[in-house]
Length: 230
Image 1 (cartoon, rainbow, N blue to C red):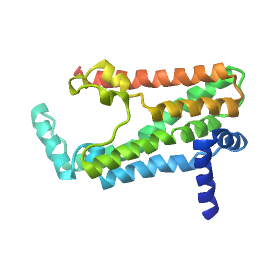
Image 2: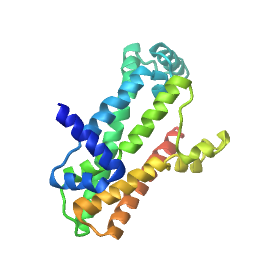
Image 3: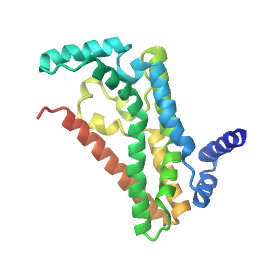
Image 4: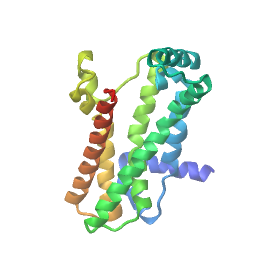
């Protein structure tokens, strides 16, 4: 256990200061367990400690009361048990949602890299994406912790510079997906594809940008759709 812990600390150091060493290790043997535990346990755990930061409601009772009032307006009467399950699901889904993003991005990255004369397996692409995402995961933890402790979460995206009146604008949704940690994540993915898959620099940059743009398009698109009632 101690050796595994020390190995993960070393990988974290490599991720920050010498990512090529980490990706060379991934090329030899896929490794994604540590980042998976961070997002599947770390984020939900903080959400359980500070439920207001994760759900917008300080207690389960407030959550149930809000949705029961909403049910009166919509004519749908959800059972209290189902709302309780939904409350905790919303918290846990933080980690599960990130896992889905990893699977989508690694599938796209691995497929495109192999199509561009690279050589690697899906589990290697998943390892690249998982480790590269850690800066974003830690920034999300900071946001949750500061929101839980101080009431207002520290945010890093460019949309935080826009006035409140623009929070339902396309520009806000777009800039919400851009911050230094996300850019760092994309740069690490690009570097990982070069080291692990051996693709040319221009191809790695292309793959990184295409997958990022695809994610932004899906995120913004689904949010806009949620604004409308069909």
